[in-house]
Image (tube, rainbow over all chains, first blue to last red; front, side):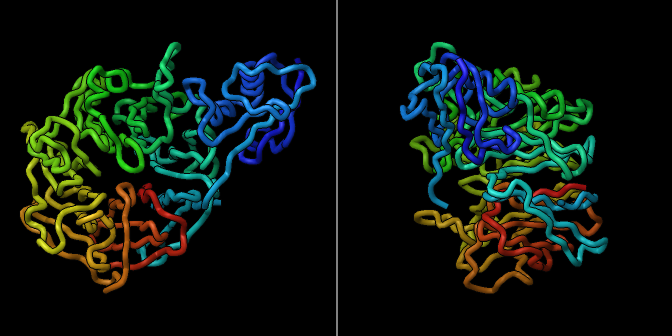
Length: 88
Length: 374
């Protein structure tokens, strides 16, 4: 399963500045594992050691928000890695 | 590019890392940075075993915590391959611990090159044996069956594990401070731990003589006499001389109108009887600002029997400084330099042990830490 991953600006230091990359995987868990293989360190900034999505991170598959990493990803989907900015 | 020469003050702020470098006489200072603009930098610490090496505890408002490492005095940084993280719980109840921020960094013993310790929020202790590249949880503390009781609640900023101290005579002998929880000691390299709070007050607890649940703000060991510990606590300034295990409230000798509340305490690099504090208003709702809007450092030169005010050069009024626990340090010059940073973004320096003060940087972001790198 190949998908497009839209990368929020705070994470682009891991993708060499790329705002969009491709990844493979049938679930968000697998997509993030693929990203981690290619961009080491990126996953832990979004997902804690208990596999929970961090407080100010939101993951979407297409337009559907994901509550956890089991969300399915299909060929051609777009995964959005969003950083929830607020305050000063 | 940040300065990469010896004798640098590293400034960790809510919005990035800065560095201040002095001329040989420490009269003029040059500010460099920021590096990691926008990142929350809690601590930047030099490795005394390899002075070209620095570690930095960082996160951003949205991204999780990590550690960066430099081996060229801060010119370039590389992220840890495995940042500090608690043990994964496969079938947890959703409450398993996760590091929210790395708060504190301490180099390991001189005989253990590459060993570092890190403290986190929630309160956790972590160890690296490869110079900060890969971190492992210290199970003896993090999984201690008493940990849920020791650390029953945190500060308004969450639980904090800080003041990690390695006895220079014995790498197995460790101390940590936990807010809120108390001071804890290990004599077996972190495998087992015991509270070390006897004599220390905890006037916010139902039981004033509790074994744990105290709020050490900063604990320091005298480099010249490792049996001498000082503690700036939520409930005053204390001293302990090992092997005795009782804290003595030396802050009682502070002027009553000033009190003995504050966050940082630093000790002279060569004289165990000399230490400095930055008193803050701990009355009513705890403003945590300089008492009466008149900032002053207080020094003891007799192990806490007496204290002298040091405010020459500091604002005389209407200056509501807050100095965080990691934001005060000393250097190692013959005439000791003393430095502190404020949450309002100023750095103040004294090159005569606090006798007079000069502002060497202003308009920085909120300052969390000020450390000296030789």
